[in-house]
Length: 345
Image 1 (cartoon, rainbow, N blue to C red):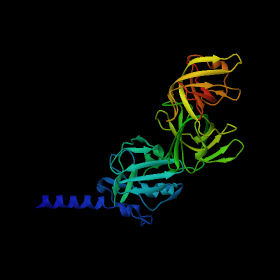
Image 2: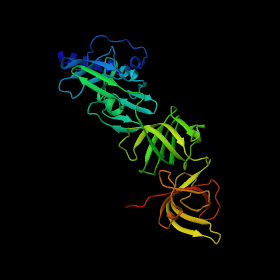
Image 3: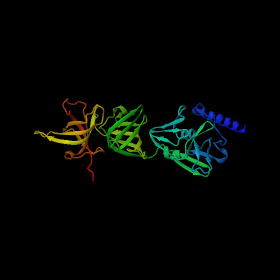
Image 4: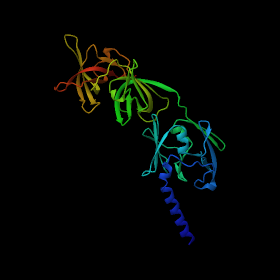
């Protein structure tokens, strides 16, 4: 009989936890002024929490032999300015603030940072209709600060966190709604990916306002982004401002990355290069002849000008041209910008 009762209570407890999505998702949660009753409460101690210097009503908890305390996710992150969305089907929470977005899933030590996964050594726990995460979530995922003194934890995230600059030529733009991943300074695993959102500012060098739809491959931009980046290849970082350094945009630009197979100069001094490799866009050919003119800009991956003499057979380049091409094989187009890769030491 005792065994049957224990099993019944266990099932009821699990059922109660799995139906807490609505309560968790509610925006007006009842503040808890007493210590929580976490899983295995007899082996846990209550932890008070401060967010940006102010105490919050909800407490965290520290399990015996645990490496770090668990903090109430909603109370802490909303205090830091994040917006939360509860997903009942996956028992997960999406968090967003400006260009920083992440996903936390109940019971899984797999935290998403701008679409990249990391582990913290402790999985999120659902307790009394609320989700708790390890304190390191604030520092390692949200890139805030965490200070622990005994049974007190202080977390903070400065809105005026330091920014750094990166300059480079756009080689890829992948848009998803208001967000986009913009790669500069290279292709494939090279360079850096700038994660932008509706909060990101876009402008020309003279201050003229732009929008995400105005950007295209080939433009040289100066990006203001966070000091932190993912450990992926290429690394990813949220960008708050992009400034286009070119004097004009070239709508419909396509591009080809590859090796210069041939360099030709006619009797009038006009130069053309034949590039063979891979198209950067769906409509771009893998092999193309690019005609160069006095208006063609020749730069390195950072957008700094280089001498035309760098365009030799065997050089690795990325050509930006079009959209008009001849119907010949290979097609011929007019290049307005060419990136020349630096020679390996």
